[in-house]
Length: 171
Image (cartoon, rainbow, N blue to C red; front, top):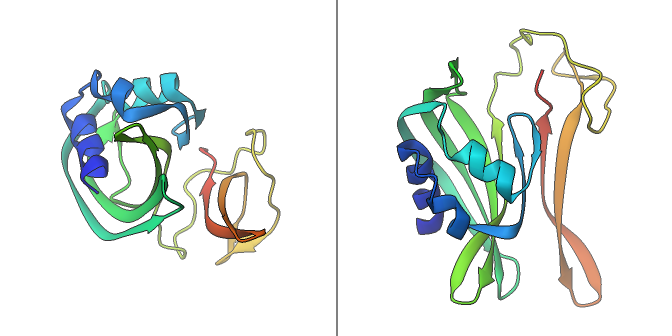
């Protein structure tokens, strides 16, 4: 959790140098415009266009995924803006870390805003976004493009689904 907290502090303070040592060379994640790699994540997470007044963690959980990997999930409450847009007040977060020598490095990160399912979407769904296509409704809201990530861990001879996160593609 200390590594996770240091990442949010680097984002808040716009510490661009932090990310090169923090992110694995194999980093992947989901950002405001789609899939991220180490280079695009470094740019986005440096927070040059963000003004973060405060953030707070809650509901932290850590799950080992073997001896050299771990999954952290938590809720984040943020008061701030990026690119002039107010950030979601509350989101669920998932980060995966792997041991690289004597350091833990981030190899995956995603945040999914917590929304009231009874609130109608403010914009129609962009059906051209590159993502998984879903058709239907959930809590009477139309389901649109979704970005999806699943993590499997080998137990004996079987791979078992351990974690998944689905995020609505930006609209």
